[in-house]
Amino acid sequence: MRSAREQGFSLVQIPGGPGWASSSGLLTSSCPFFCVLDSGYLDSQYFVHSPGPEPWLPPPLPGNCRWWLCARECGLWLSLGGFHERGQDWEQTQKIYNCHVLLNDKGSVVATYRKTHLCDVEIPGQGPMHESDSTIPGPSLESPVSTPAGKIGLAICYDMRFPELSLALAQAGAEILTYPSAFGSVTGPAHWEVLLRARAIETQCYVVAAAQCGRHHEKRASYGHSMVVDPWGTVVARCPEGPGLCLARIDLRYLRQLRQHLPMFQHRRPDLYGSLGHPPS
Amino acid sequence: MRSAREQGFSLVQIPGGPGWASSSGLLTSSCPFFCVLDSGYLDSQYFVHSPGPEPWLPPPLPGNCRWWLCARECGLWLSLGGFHERGQDWEQTQKIYNCHVLLNDKGSVVATYRKTHLCDVEIPGQGPMHESDSTIPGPSLESPVSTPAGKIGLAICYDMRFPELSLALAQAGAEILTYPSAFGSVTGPAHWEVLLRARAIETQCYVVAAAQCGRHHEKRASYGHSMVVDPWGTVVARCPEGPGLCLARIDLRYLRQLRQHLPMFQHRRPDLYGSLGHPPS
Image (cartoon, rainbow over all chains, first blue to last red; front, side, top):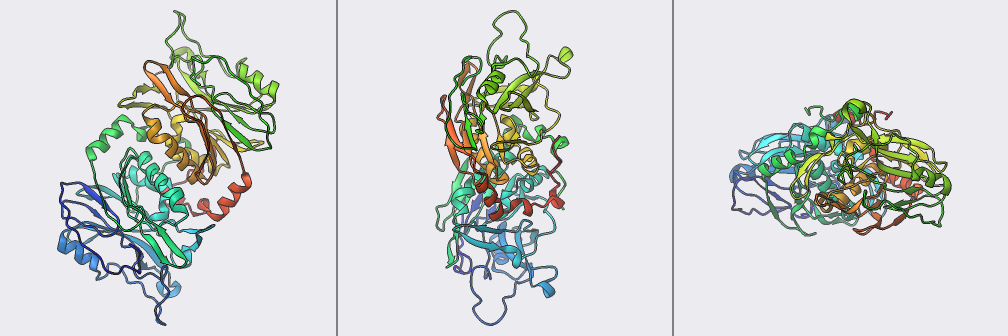
């Protein structure tokens, strides 16, 4: 989906057993399934010009949002990223947090991660992005959350370039890493799949990356290609460039077996380069 | 090449300007070129059964070796990995270090890195590997070394699974990461290229990975596919599965420009997950 273009959403009932992850756009299932959905920068100042003279106002979280209703009424776990939340000094700075929110099947917020790495880059052919102009960096990592599908670690988009974050989450117990994203049209073909696969291989986690796709406005397009990667680094489900839906089974027995065969976390050398194992907040 | 099979070596004179990296097998050039060469586990107990009743004896480093002669006589910088070196308690343990040695164009040893992550794994279909049975882990990282091609960070094979090491080297100034390797026949197709490309993207370094290839004996085969990756993550040179030679230009101006456009090292958050920037020894 493209934020600020598709304001509607669809709801699809998915059959299956426990431990499924879905990625991309518009998807759901019923408990004990697990669902990942990218709501993106809904109504975002990043993607649309202000429709009128009124200043755009990000809602505080948790808001009275259709996704809360969706989780509760359908009995779904939902991963929603990146919502805009008023920053701690909103009145002075007018800056927001870029938030990844995890809802349980009762519609309760069980975790909120505020993006810690802000994307201030100038990629030739893709146009400049200065996220810190409007956003403040999150103050902490978020402890992985137990869900019916496994322990979920939360991150957002540009965070995937920093192995430190995914390793810290894995060392804190994560089994599934989630990266709701709006990757660029130049960085996407070059880096999206290779970074997601590497994060999966080196953390031995599933990686679920729902992605915005298509053109938001004349200056911005997102790469799409939502995917799920297994802990061996195999892409086990993927969407095409456009809107779509993909599903993958989360097999924690396989994950544990792999970690036994290739016990990388026992081979690390924090004595040489420091530890990333600081427990998240 | 396959250690313990190809005991000979070739020497090829390479034309070109400054800042070239070559990868795989048998190669050289003359100063100010830079050369990477994988000598592999020469005469190694890993790859051949002992030819006689005499115990195999690893030479101390630096030895009177043909590679020293080669560097000096041809005026080459050579990256040689993994040599066997007697461990610090050799008399008691009979264990070795797995060494990556960098020679300058005078034949002098300018750096020695002893592999810090030992590969004790049991990959289905690839057979078990218990490197620590015969090898002791290196006690430290090695500071990146200034060469005519750029600042070289040293690592070996299995090390590439640990982003901590490559990030620590990059934060200590590395511009080129080197991974002489003998990757497995199962892990190779699954992980070799994706990990090398990810290491390049997230450190914004060139990655030069010379690789053993082919079958060493009935229980062990190596994947080959030596390659050079640029700091954007593009594979700019690669060998086929078998013996070969590939060349790539090292363009440090491009590297610096990329680091300006995408200043990831300024975006890191050591306050959240610790720092990997401990200066190597």
